[in-house]
Image (cartoon, helix red, strand yellow):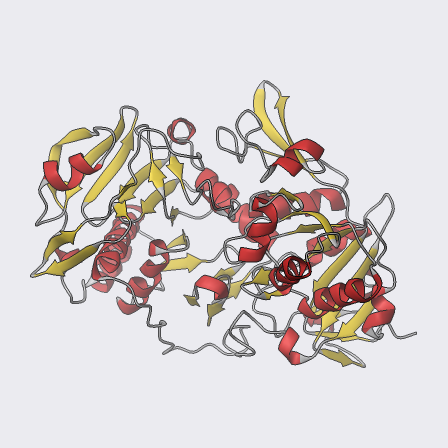
Length: 539
């Protein structure tokens, strides 16, 4: 019998209080049609209700997927559909953030790599144990994984400190899902699922395995664009016996990302050799920061004498991809995106997780093994606050709940970390004039503070692990040492006392070799990096 059924028949299987695992990295692999139809059923009948959602990342974007459902919940003033959720990142989902902030549902958050590990652990009946999160806000001795008071009270999901052979680890856990809502491109009548037109693989297979594992194997419903009599055997990502129902979706609920309906270069069907980076409207000084970060990557290529693989975080670090591409060194400095793509042009904001013309795409659990194990060579991540010892708060504020995203795993595993961001925050006017930094109006918000609001990167543990850590801004470059932050470089045009030290809540160590930043990063011209890396690799 064919597993391709009407959406109503498939959703009949979902009951009150079910734990539902949902795939999705922003809108990539998000089964939006299934989610909206499930909520439509609830509005009509009052059931199913009190659902608990667990995800590998975020099956939403602004006004899409679960964020749209959260918006409807507020408009209807009815919060009985979702009892709670564990989501790893809420940064592009304002209505889901509001559910957490206002304590309307239980809200928990694992790092993305820990969530993907947890799904595979459920599938193999083993606990999800890792060192990721020790000494940070995720540590139960600090805040733990709890995003609001309801979560702290009920503890449906948990994180515990455990000891193995005298070493500390964290154990992360949530209830085993009974239902899996996943997404692929095409399925045959037996349920064999391909991902041929998806931008990423995400954790679709891992979620399916977790739902189907003993004890109490559950039910998996797959959303697809096409139902076919047969599919190519080698294209099958999830075997048919693991899928119970297949539902075809209208195209408008099955987009490759938030803004891309279908682009063959995104799913790897074609590779565009002359693809152009998006024209991001970024300030000159932000481009300068990215150029300085890329110089550090080039130095690493010179030191190692080979191409390197790196990760770039959201925000200013992502601008480094533009520099790497424009300098023609993308074959030597290969960027990765935490959702799975290697190489290509990574997109940002609500389209983050998708890349144009990637050279490879890995399933997300495998991608995060690369990060946690330090298999990549370096990472550049953003920062919101930095403390005297080098601790980093990546994105947390009292009035904003974003979740950890991929930051804790990448910061834990990468052997080299180049944190990158503006020196101050707030309304500011900073420009590059004649190769010098001009601070016309500085930001009023201090980012180098005595005590960061939350710790996402623990500098003491980083030093013990032997990490190379730098903090790169438009006016100053610091290096992490056992004495704390050491000021090593300053931008031409700045006054060190007035523009750097006076804008910090603590005094860094001043290097005996303090020097100006390389003026090449302040010029509006190519830096000639291709010749440098080619020479380094031919040595």
